[in-house]
Image 1 (tube, rainbow over the protein chains, first blue to last red):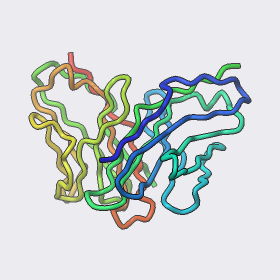
Image 2 (cartoon, rainbow over the protein chains, first blue to last red):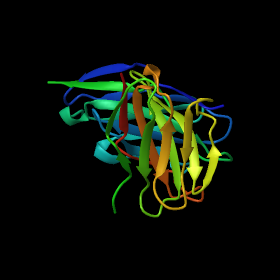
Image 3 (cartoon, each protein chain N blue to C red):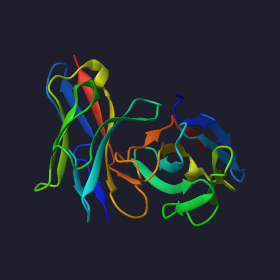
Image 4 (cartoon, each protein chain N blue to C red):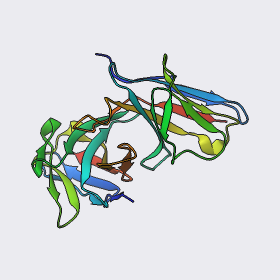
Length: 115
Length: 116
């Protein structure tokens, strides 16, 4: 069974500071990994995905994530936070074989960006 | 190319009534997923459907919940005899299919169900 753990349900950073949102996963097969962002009262928007190609993945809005198999991690980073980055972020894992590719989500990290 | 459409966006039902949530996938997508987001929680998988077939319903509650994706028309998530615990945001996602190399899912804006 696959699972996702997001450490820190709330993260607060200053505008211009580094953003680091943590995600650890467990999966019995090589995983596909995703980061989604959710703004208030909206659906989820894909930020980036890892699909067994390059381990450093670049996404939209300046975000990137690095897949580290040895640490079973897929942390999300952005060098310089912007006020518009304030939102909830979800890490998700999908198994690559059988049973479709349903996503298993972490519980989310609410990012607050302060002046 | 329109995105995933869900309606209604907000739905209020009294306890014991039925709720019907609709999802139209992106054009060209034949796979639909439903997820539920309870307050202060992440999204939980409910059901995965292809046209006229339920592929995986391992996340569906055993009673009162059903889903369909007919040959024509939107996918429907149906909740009978709603209870207060059903209050949540219900999200639909679609994908081109399992042959898609990205396995990416595109999400709709959600239906927020409130049971009074």
